[in-house]
Image (cartoon, rainbow, N blue to C red; front, side, top):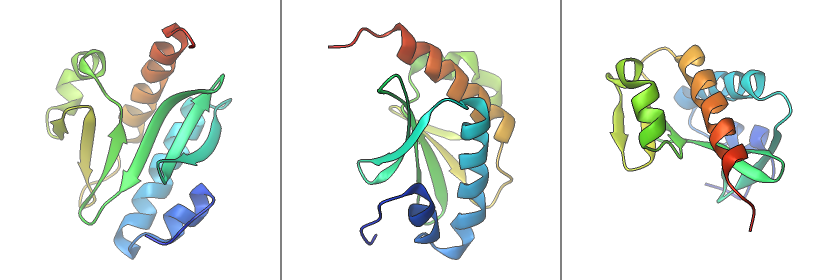
Length: 121
């Protein structure tokens, strides 16, 4: 991955099959978290509220991932997440399937609540 400075550059640098899906993921997160600051952290798209990281996404060869998604997220969306691979705090969505925008938005909103509950410091 070449050095990129914006989320748009990050998406544009991805292989062609991933770009459309990543644009939909980005749109779902931005709609769910309209006040979030969009940036890159760890060289992947990051969304922050009140300087607290809420959610990240990344594109890969055959899938894209959302981070972090802990036990509370998995439990809250258990049925909807059943078809996807979940490992540690990562949810993997195959590029070969439609982007579940409503699910991603729901995850982003719950992550925002979790982030707001953390104390700074």
